[in-house]
Length: 417
Ligand code: SAJ
Image (cartoon, rainbow, N blue to C red):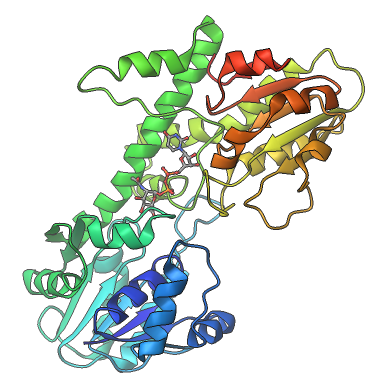
C-alpha cells in the first residue's frame, strides 16, 4: 500500500520506518524543513534506540521519503502533536490543519487514521466534518478510524511490534481495514471498537498511571508527617496479590501522563474530580521537594549551593519535556538564597549544566537526586563528601542505600520518609 504519514515526530517517524521496512511505500510529511531534509538523507533528529538504523534502511530501500506537503495515497495516518494550552485544554490546531491538508488527495477507497492522542469525540466531531468536504461517502467510500499509539519512549520500536493495539473505527468496515493494515507489523492482539471508545482508552491508560502516582505521592507526604517510610509501606503493601502501589517522586513529567488526563477533564470538569486532583497533587511535588530542601538547609547562613543530579523527565533518556525536576531547578533559580547547578550526562547543553561532578559539588550544601540514571549508581560519595561545604543528600527516588550514604559521611534525607 501507499501510505502518507503526516507528522514525523516520536510516533510518526518510527511508524513510517516500520511500515516502510515491511514492504509498504511511505511518504512522510512534516512542516519542518529540517525534519524532511534530514530524513531524505537517512538521518533522524530525535534520540530513540535503533531508530536511526531502521530509518536509514528504509530510506536506502526507496520505500521511505519525506516532503513538506501530502500527495495521493491509499492510506493517510495523522500523527501530529496535540499540545496543551495554558488553560489546560487540548490544542487541536495541528490535527485540524493536517486533516484539512489531506482532503484534496482523498479518493474512493482511501483510509484515514488518527494516531495523535486526542480528547474523546475528536474523530467524530472534528475530523469527519472536514473529511466530508472531499465529497466522498464516509464509512463506505472513505474509511476512518482512531488507533492510538501506546509505546514507551526508549522502547518504541519493540513496543510498536509487541504491544496490543486498539482500533476504533467509525464503523466495522473502517476498523477491519485498519486492523489488517497494522497486522503487517503488529504481533500483539488488535482489538476493535468505536472511535470515541478508542480515544478514551488511550487517555485512561495514562490517567490510570497518573492517578496511581498521585496516590503514591500523597502517601509520601503522609509518611513524612507520620515519621514512617513510604517506600516500606509500598514494598510490604505490594506483597498483597491485588495491590500495586506506584512510586512517589519529584513529580510527573513527559508529554503524556502530565497532559492526557486534562483532555478528559476538559470534557467533563465537574465529573472528572479524582483525575483533576491527581494532576494537582503530582504538580505539587516540585514545590514539596523545594520546601523540604529549604528546611534541610534552614540552619545554613548565606547563599546555599544545591546540586541537582539528573533533570530529564525520566531515567536514561535525554528528554526534558515537562520535566518536574526542571521545575524544581527553576524554583531554586528564582530564590536568591540559592545557587543551583545540574549534573546530568544525558543533557547535552543547558545554562546550568556542570559537566564535572567534583566541580559541581565543590562548596555545595545539598545534593538532590532528581532522576535515577543508571550512571548515578556508580558515584563514589566518599570522594565527594570532603569537597562539600555541608554534605547533605536528598534522594527523591529511593535510589541509594541510605546506610552507605551515611557511611560516606552524608546526612541522608529521603522523599517519603
Ligand atoms: N513516574 C513516577 N512514579 C512511577 C512511574 C512513573 O513518578 O511509579 C513518573 C516518571 O518519573 C516520569 C513520568 O511518571 O516523570 C512518566 O513516565 P512513564 O514511564 O510512566 O511514562 P511515559 O510518559 O514515558 O510513557 C507513557 C506510557 N503510558 C503508560 O505506561 C500507561 C506509554 O505506554 C505511552 O505510550 C506514553 O505515555 C504516551 O505516549 O502516551
